[in-house]
Length: 253
Length: 253
DNA sequence: GGGGCAAAGTTGTCCGGACCAATACCCGGT
DNA sequence: ACCGGGTATTGGTCCGGACAACTTTGCCCC
Image (cartoon, rainbow over all chains, first blue to last red; front, side, top):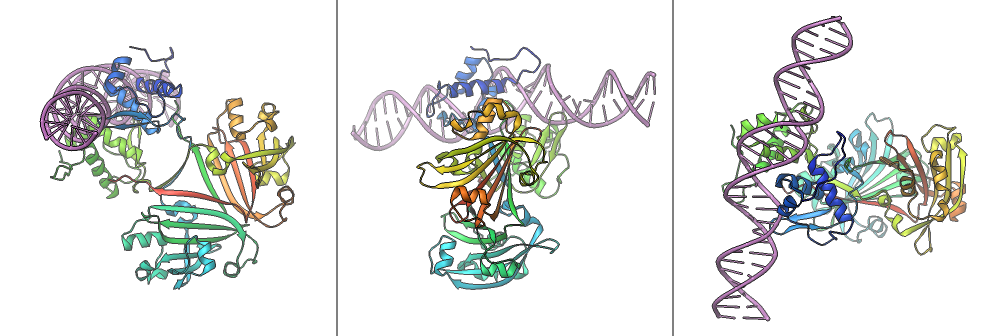
């Protein structure tokens, strides 16, 4: 039986955390290489002189950190020797991709079913010729004092009949599609780039055509990876920025 | 004592998971509003006729899902009634903020200690007058076939002496600062906006001044929230885009 | 009324034990 | 060589108990 390292002072970490540290060190040192198995719970109990409960608490930490993987009956396997995830950005719902979606409203100017042209198809990364419900409009701040962006949303034609009253609804369109069709958005890809403001968006926003603009393309994909919906937003470059905050997120150790 | 719901078949969920589901339902139903306290562990034991160990396993699930918050000696508090995190974007290190950082190199053109002017101070959101080590350069693709962006990094003056050989080092500068100073970056804030390419960056990149460009500001903050380092990147708008992928990530439940 | 201290209440840690379910492995039969 | 079954191994679940650490509350005293 080995004794886990502990500071003499009153600030010793709990036993299970010290055990986790020891195992982390062993993994980092290559004693348990990636792909190999960790000792069994019982063996760790005997080796360190602690109860199985404590061993399991330590191993749970390593699982949470993505260092090991456990399977009932098969043991624990090392799947990474890198330090734990250091920075995470968490979004609770697609609406929070942009924080403003909570406090803004979409004013729909037009909604019609169209066949995708060459240029539009390239813009949204999908083959031309397919039919989509195209919704265009302007997103305003809650107090309607300022225009946030020009919006073009392409919704797959199979959802078109569910959205005949879309201009009278509020809330994110993707949520409406999910609620009424029962199909879930499994993945979203967001692409941010800078480009010259196109004429249609410039007209709607009252800005100069060709001015620097932030273009945000969001593609909402179903389980098979096919797009259910694609949104293109044009923001005046001098008025809006997209901010994300990443916090360090590993335990005090 | 209440009995937790369970299917009659062989596919009943473990007891602690059913208890977690029951508590989730109670939170969603408003029986435990956001901000209020949950019953104590002992009370939940008595109410559902399970051991404290089982109650704690259930509560741990709710903590992991961000629904409740627990403090030793103070009880459990409901902090959200929304379903668990639906979409997450995980970044293993700040270098992966942009995937290209792995495969690019920074060519440093200049590094000198400067006093922050009015315009620069406003650009990086920090009062003027303070002294910083300003590093400028161009980031190239790995094969040096293309320029990725123009880079200006402001490092707090207290780290300047640690970076005298910065032009001969490679890897992310923030990692160098962390390793040599021992201070950790606790938080990073990234701001993406579109603007006209400024003259200095246009010269370095060989593009037209005033062309649409993607401006990315990253501020690296220490534990007190003060900036350790600020980076400003200018990307030619027609050549680069910033993409993030969000996958739906809630448990099967 | 304010400050300090004691007590009660609550969660955190740690031990013991028992049984169940999934997996891996050996071994014999074909 | 392949397939099946039985058995040992291993993690998952659940119970019981005890003490420690921390927070809140309220009382007492100044």
